[in-house]
Amino acid sequence: MDSRFRRHVLIVILDILAPIFLVIALGWLLTRSGFLSGQALLQVNRLAYWVALPALLVHRIAQASPDVDAVAGLLVVGGGATVLAIVAALVVAALLGLPPQSRGTFAQGVYRGNLTFIGLPIILYAFSGPDMSSASAEASALLAFGPMVVIYNVLAVLVLLLPGATGHGNAVRDAVKGLLTNPILIACLIGLMMSLSGFSFPTLMDRSLDVVGQMALPLALLCIGGTLHTSRIRGRLTWVIAGAAMKVAMVPAIGFGLALWLGLSAEHMRIALILLACPTATASYILVKQLQGDEALASGIVVVSNLLAVPAMVVVLAVTA
Image 1 (cartoon, rainbow, N blue to C red):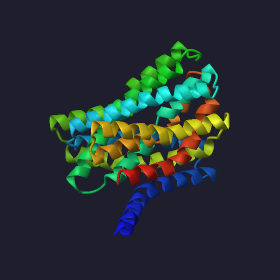
Image 2 (image 1 turned 90 degrees about the vertical axis):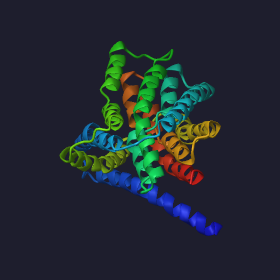
Image 3 (image 1 turned 90 degrees about the horizontal axis):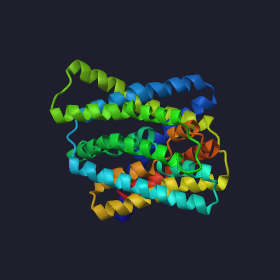
Image 4 (image 1 turned 30 degrees about the horizontal axis):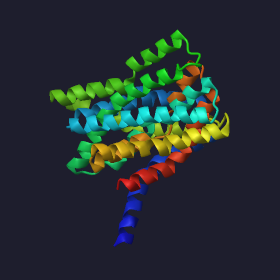
């Protein structure tokens, strides 16, 4: 019986993760072969980020009936684990002897996960069942995205402007503007207002959003694969591996402890750990470049954390099965 249960759990985990990482691998192959050029990859990424993903979020959240208390618990775990991860990262950075201008970069690489392009697809597959608990858990996860986007972006600017950083006012202003115009955040707010008001889209609009939203996940995953091909592991390897390992192992472990302490349900603990185990977001490198941080370290952590995320997600899904 135990053997059958373990086999069933393994099959479920493969059904969740295999499609995600196979499409990422396809994006890597298409870019490597030249089928997707760098310019095409950039345009696909813009289409996914500014059009497809917002349509998906508005459509899903507007139809959702989320558990507000559960969303609050998710945000406490996510925000608490993020703050503790930053503190731990700064301590480790000092122990590893990173120069002051690299410590903010290291901290951002440790805490800032790719919720949109990796976390969202995994959650949607993990809670794709027809039962009401799956639908409620998915709704809670989608509503947690907006606040987590705010938390990540605000903290990113703060840690990169620690003493020793060389950020400029223009870069900070651009970062704040990017937050206020973030399409993911705006889509979450629109979907939430629709859900709370009880207003439903006309059939024409509902179906249009559904069709556009359906292309979000494959486009996002193809972009991740293409980005991994064009990125390179640079910077001191010890620092890169330490940051990547902390991102996919230490951060979800902190979240696991907080989730147990708060008494989150099994479904919401799974959501929290999936979000916290996501590899470092590519956006972290972009902000590091804007604020003149350690670009080599940032790109290295992005690449290695994406590689380590596969076994990390297997562990997370197994623990919360």
